[in-house]
Each structure stands twice: as structure tokens, then as C-alpha cells.
Length: 166
Image (cartoon, rainbow, N blue to C red):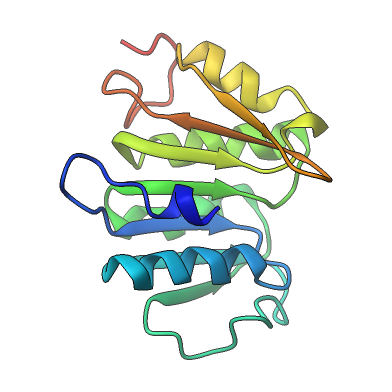
């Protein structure tokens, strides 16, 4: 996760990152450490549980935690004011409908060259279906307890929610 978080697009380090699903905050802490090493970036983390993020705690200068009730429109409400993103990490509700809804909402905000990362892609076909519809070439990484999907968004698929990737 840290290598993914530290990616560079050309010589320019991107700054806006969003993750859904904080839980104890392990991924959050890794992403924040990578941003601290880069010296730039803000992470917006979204969860439904007030106790989420215990490993990070409050007060990290690069971290904004957003608590929602999990309804579909709330992700768009958080993403709207942020502008373009360079990283979106899904690790919340792993149902097909929730995953696809998050990928579509995030795709409207992802800049060309951004990474979309999804944990537990083996729980449904949503990640592969999304990539297929947008003509993206995903990579699936095997972790001890899950499969993680990673895809770089192309110029034709960035900022759109339709298929085709052109």
C-alpha cells in the first residue's frame, strides 16, 4: 500500500487521495506515512463508524476523516469539493452494488494517470466489470487474506462514468 501511495505521475507528486473504509486505520496510517515521506498530500477517509481510525488518532495534519451513514450519495458529497484525485482506495462495503457505485462515483473525480485501488476484489466481480466497461487493464495483487485490485485510469476513462474508455 505504501508503494501505491507514493506513486509519482511524471515528476509531479499528486496530492488528493480518498479512501473508503477506515476500520482500525492500518491502511490510513500507511498512506499517511507515504504522503509524509513525499512531503505533500491530503487524505480524505470515509467511514460509518465513529471509532474508526484508532491507529491514527485525531490531529494528523494531512488527514480528514468524514463520517457518513453509508448512503450512496454521501460519497459524491465528499468527493465534489475535492477536485481531481490521484488515488482512490475502496475498502468499505464489498457488495457488488456498493463497489460499483463507489468506482463510478470516484471515476468522475479521478485525473488521468490516477490509481483506483480496491481491497477484496474476490468478493464480487464489480472491479473487473468496471475495468472491462472502461477498457482498463487491472492488476490483481494477492495478499495473505485477500486480493487487491489496482488500475491506472487512462485519459479516456478519467472523469467519466460511462463505458468505452475513449
